[in-house]
Length: 172
Image (tube, rainbow, N blue to C red; front, side, top):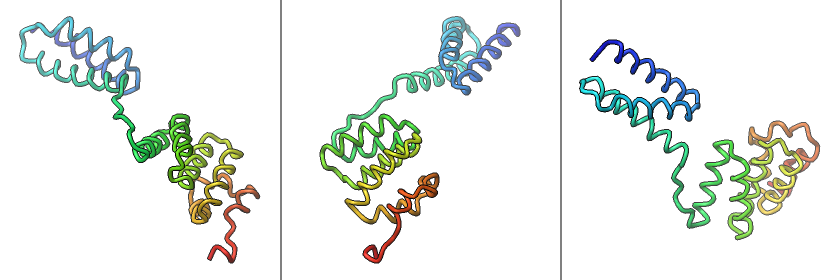
């Protein structure tokens, strides 16, 4: 293989990987597709090695663009998916799933607690306190959890939060 062709392939592949790593998947796909179209038929031991890597990256881009989600058949499936969304910073889909669980009366205290955390991360203290209050009313244990949960640290200067999590003699 000519050195100029190999250098061109290496340069394009390096740029595509750089785009991929920076999250510019459209550009990365365009370059990877171009490499496959232009060079996959060349006869050289270098080409199969590169094409394997190119196809792996293309598969990863495909997976990112069209993620496969298993069907959410049970309430536990929906709860796990909601927690996944919370952990991924996808608060709106998390809250939507959690609200569906509330409508089914599934683990209401825990669900309200999770919704409170989602609203907290969205910087909505009013909704946070509303759902936290409901969780604590359903199960006083959430008072202790909220008091010790670092997620709620931004609310520790708010009287309404402190009133919610204050332990009383009836809590012991």
